[in-house]
Amino acid sequence: MKQTSPNDPSLSALALSFLRLGTLAFGGPVVHLAMMRQEFIHHRKWITEQQFLDRLALANLIPGPSSTEVAIHIGYLKAGWKGLLLAGLCFIFPAFLSTALLAMLYVQFGSLPETTKILSGVTPVVVAIIAQTVWGMGRSSLKRPLDWAIAVFALTLFITGLGPLPVLALCGGISFAAARLPSPQKLFSVAPVTIFLTFAKIGSLIFGSGYVLLAFLQEDMVTRTHWLTSKQLLDAVAVGQITPGPVFSTATFLGYLLGGWPGAVAATAGIFAPAFVFTGLSGLLMDKLRKSAAVAQVLAGVGAGSLALIAYAGVFLARAAVTGWFTGGISLVAAVLLFRWRTNTVWLVLFGAVAGFLATLI
Image 1: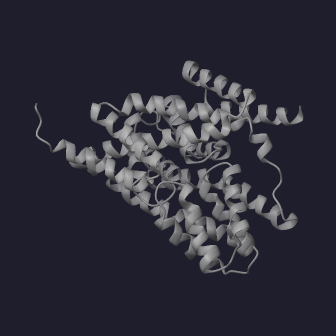
Image 2 (image 1 turned 90 degrees about the vertical axis):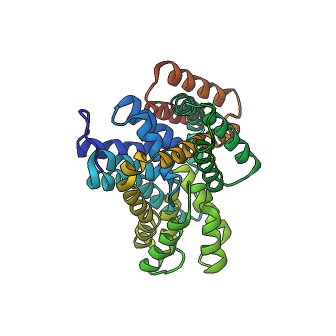
Image 3 (image 1 turned 30 degrees about the vertical axis):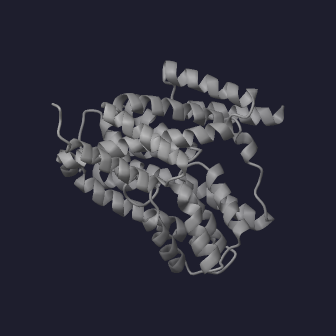
């Protein structure tokens, strides 16, 4: 249900904000969530920290790409069904377009252009953004000693290799149970419809983020249908990483390989359609769910687990991104700008991209 406030955005402002985020949000769902939090809570003040945390927890409990679902939730919260569609489509479109164009180059030349070099300055900025997000969300969402304990427990489970869904379910269960304890007080010609249905099935089954997408694609595209080779699949996943927006845009690349531009559109629509449906349905229930003490306790536990998941992903990204004095320096400068002056993450990403590009020239 749409919630009104004095600073509600117009539809055009909502669309432009998500279009810009979709264009500049490199690095996967953890970075997308960090940028959304900074943009919509601290910069534009469209939503509250609690509204963001509730929808992040809910997005982690339904199938589909979590960062895209949070974007859809925010759109629905601010402008109803029109906002739901507008926010989701504007966030997805830049990833669809850039990935499809790279797929076209891939088919034409048989390899990917070396675009990763110019991103060498972006990934250290991403590390700072994640650190600031974990710090800010931790201070506002981990209000009880139990929340801190759940977050530490979840982080431990993630380190041992347990998947996000069972960990988040366990976190919600612990928070719920604890409240009830006594208190002391195109390479093939595949029909677009077939492509759409195949990717819609995958989009309906994946929980959490795009990082578990590879296993599903391997099973369906390589092992079962033999539509692609393992190398082509890995190339597609790589494109999903180096293009802005949702990692699920990997589907756009694969759709293009399987059926050209119609296939790219069908695959993109299929992989993201379940997210719109599940998010819309869960958004309708959010107000009623939030009023339930039991659901609020579950969401608190899931929120703590989600924060641990972001921190866990951030540590691994930091190890890969900060590889020397140059990348370390960029990450440090970005961290100072974020923690001290709350610089808009859009400018930080542009700063990192320019630094990375200049480094390749030098």
